[in-house]
Every structure is written in C-alpha cells, then in structure tokens.
Length: 222
Image (cartoon, rainbow, N blue to C red; front, side, top):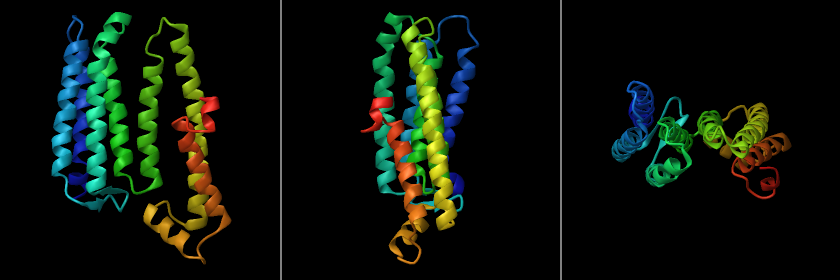
C-alpha cells in the first residue's frame, strides 16, 4: 500500500534520473528530445495519479484523496505547458540545454510530494526539492549577471525561509509531540492541548511558506 501511494512520485523521479543520464550521452543538442521525454514522463505520471487509491501510508506521513489527485493533475498540466512555452524562449536566449526540462521535472516532483504530505517533515522534503530545482533555474543563464544574482539571492533567502520552517516545526513538535497534521489539528481543538508555543510554531511555519511564495508582506525581500 505504501509504495502504491507513492508510485507516481517514484516513477517521475526515475524518469527524471533516466532523462538526465540520457541527455549527456550523444554529442548533439538533446534539449528538444529531453523536453519531449519530460512531457511524456508527466503524462505517464498523470495516468498513474488517476489509479492511486485513497488511503494513508508511510506511518501516516503520505495521504491520497480526491483533492490531492486533482491538484496533482493541475500541477502536472502546468508543468507540461511551462515546458512547451520554454522551448522557443530558451532557443532565443541560448539556453537550450537538456538540464532545463529535467530541473522542471524535479521541481514538479517536489510539488507532488507536498500535495501528498500529511506531516510537516514530508512537506519540508517536497519544499526543499522544489526550491533547490528553482535555485538552479533562476541562475540558469550563467552569462547574465542578473540571472546569477537572482539565483544567489533566491538561495540565501530560501535558506532563511527553510530555517524558519524547521524552527517552527521544532516548536510544534516540542509543544504538540507530533508533526502530523491530524494530531496537530486535534491538539488545536482541545483546549487542554493548546499552547502559545504551538501557535508560535505554526506562525513560523506559515511565515516560512509565505516567504517561499513571496506573499505579502514578505514580497519586499524576495
């Protein structure tokens, strides 16, 4: 059951690694071929998402339901459209390298993990996979000073946001004794289990997530 719930993510990760290895083999430019292969991997993943049953796995850290499947399909569709839109732009800018669609593939994998998460630690794993891929995408134009600056600033600010997230998660675990969404919700509903430390921890986590997506008022720093 555990592996069945995570099958779309496992297949997408394996496809990303395979495309990354295939891209370095031939001498000719593999940008278009790797982009098409990445879109094919997204289509296969979408088909697998539709077959995943409802349930929880990995000690309750991963969950699958109708809402998660719907959001995953939206993410996969958006990633495929983004790859197609990037074809002409990357060629014009001289960025037609096979690593680009692979980075988008791993960023998509991070989003899928976050959508399956039922625990703050699982959210963190997906969030960091997404962020690390986007750091490289931001600095992908190596000969452009603005691109390099954007990648470096994004990395530094992303590391700060990750620190806030982990600090908030540690507070939540310290005061609630768990990082599971369900148990935290129960603790918040129970007046005896509610505490200021738990609230502060959740505020830190929300601030970190807002920092990552440049939400107000954190957009001034990102």
